[in-house]
Length: 64
Image (tube, rainbow, N blue to C red; front, side, top):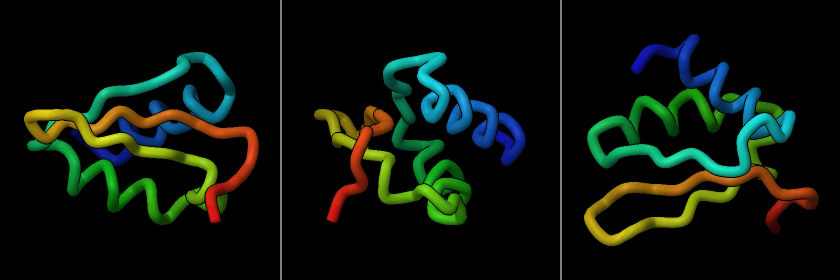
């Protein structure tokens, strides 16, 4: 997964183009490295799934 692809996915989540996105365990570190550079980082929520995948959503209010 490349940074540009990850940034496009984050934009889709941010703009409600998609409701959620599943990140595989193998792509997690790359995805997270791009995610934490976002100004609205705290609006993204990742929920771990059994097996190591994470489902990311974009929230209306930032997490604390």
